Length: 184
Figure 1 (cartoon, helix red, strand yellow):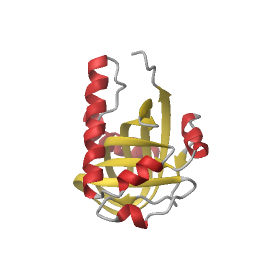
Figure 2: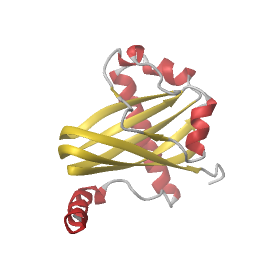
Figure 3: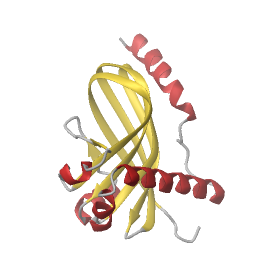
Figure 4: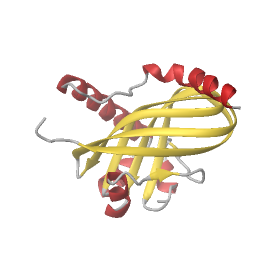
């Protein structure tokens, strides 16, 4: 099994090599990534204008401008995002996802996490926040925010960008938070 699993994971990971997986080390790189995140948030809000109110009332939010996902039985996804609290950038967040099941394909999407209160956001800040197989995300479309409930203090929204992913899988997302030095 191990002889089959490792090559399969390598094949699945290859398309994600071009994804935004590195830290924004240079100030110009960070600014470009932040601009991409802001543009993704604007596209999400254009699809569902009621999300503006949800975000304005939220304790904090994280926007992942691009998450790349690939699968063939076993799958994975990866993306980098930015955490905002009170409209101020407070950290960068890395999303890593693994899945197992009857699935195949590849896709990219933007993801928005909205934190209703301090407690779930502190779980993210302390790197103990994750989504299990039972978590759901709402696909962004007009009126979606009005019909979405907070689950353990968090709402998740996805805006598909490209590709096709088909199948049934058990998924889990893990998040790694890194505080941003505001003096950079």
